[in-house]
Structures are given as C-alpha cells and as structure tokens.
Length: 114
Length: 113
Image (tube, rainbow over all chains, first blue to last red; front, side, top):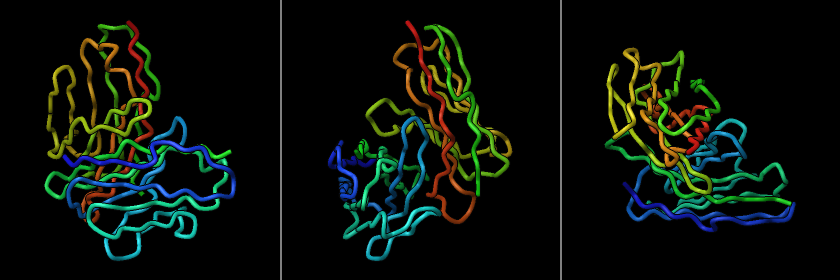
C-alpha cells in the first residue's frame, strides 16, 4: 500500500481565514480523494482530485469553498476557504488502488476554527 | 444514492467477549471494505471482500460478505482492549466509479480490561 502524509497534522484557525492542507504520496496514483470527518461522525467525500483537470465535487461541496489542486500524480492540496466554526473537522486524503479496488487514507488534518 | 446502515453505533464490552458489527444496504456493492480508526489517526484498511458469500479471517476477526453483496458483518472473537476503536464499513459502487466509497456511520467499540 502507498504511504500517505498530510500537512499540517492539526491547526487552530480564526474565523474568516483560509487553510491549505497538503497530501503527499510516496508513489504515483491515479485516484486521490478528499474527505471530511466531523466530530464523532463517519467520513463524507468532498471531491475527487483529478490530475491535470478540475476536481469533481460531491453534492453540498463547491469549488469556491474547497478549492483543490492536483499538479501531479503524487501530490494534492485542499484549501478550506473563509472558515467558520462549522468547518471544524478532520480532513483526510485517500488514494485508490486500481488493482484491489481499495482506498488507503492519510493520517488526517485536525482543524479547529474559533 | 447508495446508503450503508451500520449497527450498532456504540458497543462497550468486557475483554474476552465476542461481538458482531453489521453493515446493510438495499444496494449492491462491487466490493466492501472494513476499516479501523483510532483517535487522531486516519482509517486503516482491515480487509476488502469482493465475492458474494466470501468469508475472510484476520486473526480473531472474521469478515463476511453477503451472497447478494448487499451486506457484510465483522465478528471479533475474544475481544481485547487493543481492539478499541471506530470500525467503519465502506462499499464501492457496483459498476462505474468503483473508487467512490459509501461509508457507514461507524461503530465505536470500547473493550474494557
């Protein structure tokens, strides 16, 4: 399985500011995803990060609020824009394995918005 | 929209007891995955089941995929405190976007020594 790292691991931010989360994979992967996990909840898919094209967003998530970059096959960023306390969550990136139909997750970024 | 109903939501048991977690859906999945997540970490893949009726064992954990590929169960024998964590099932869509996972709400398991 791929080794996935995320930066930062946690942050405390002020309302109205933006935070960019980085996801780095140790090998080239086709599929990368961004999820949100609100406190005590399960995972909700935000978007699929597509290399070389715009991300594909799920219902309820928009590019203006969660812009995503995917400049190559090993790296992606998710920005949480104009943050409010409701954005306090764990944000996770994951990669898909074409051969085994599975996804592997990074360690997550714990965001607290004051 | 495919939904996965996971139960129970919370489970607190004593060391040595057995338990079963269930994941049910009205939709067919091409595969189903089970993850365990510990506080402050991302979900860690335990197993992927693909074939209807498939049973996989991982030490004291037994995973089963229903014949119709609509449901799955996780059975833990002689639970230990190290099994404590959030257990998540996730189904991959049947046909089309296989890598788009639908997650259950999770089962928070606490095993008391």
